[in-house]
Image (cartoon, rainbow, N blue to C red; front, side, top):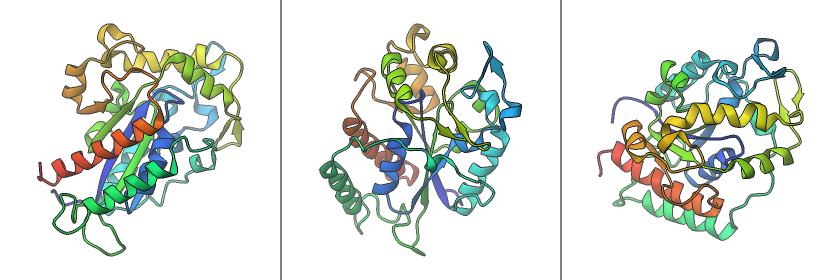
Length: 264
């Protein structure tokens, strides 16, 4: 492995696709893991663009991409959470965990066994303070694989790229259940019709190239995913339950870490 202190796992997908829930689950299963949120790089409200008379929080222009890139470079170099990032995302509630305690316990046991001496994952990750190995950072964000992020140099800094799918109906239902979001200025609540006017059109525009015919509720283009190094639950449909997604993500991350370490 190259001389660095951390691996970074990206989780992207539409708003309310389960990114933060999955990020927190992976943090609990893989030792020494911490989370960086794309949402922690929002620009101030006074700098946000508007669309149809509404502030647009769901476009690339709303994110300080150079600052996020700086944070990722710090993580790869130092293996620690960037001291210049003031995270507010963990103040947002994501509701009750949709994954059973038995599945979480099973995943923890599987990862622990994988890290033992003689096992494929041994010494890849730092499984105790001051131990050898890399720390893992999970980056969750709604635009990680967009052309704007590519222009800003983000995807090359991600060692694993996971994509979560969701239907417009499910995303709308989940987003409308939320009370709102903690921001730099205070608290944001979606105005009526925000998903239809802002959230979903932006998601569709940014992710069309990943789907056959550009239909983000259709089939993924596996050739494009392979070219971009993105892993997704191909052929499983849009609204895969989080328990299934969690098991898939744990296995996918373990396999990718073995690849990085040259063990596959």
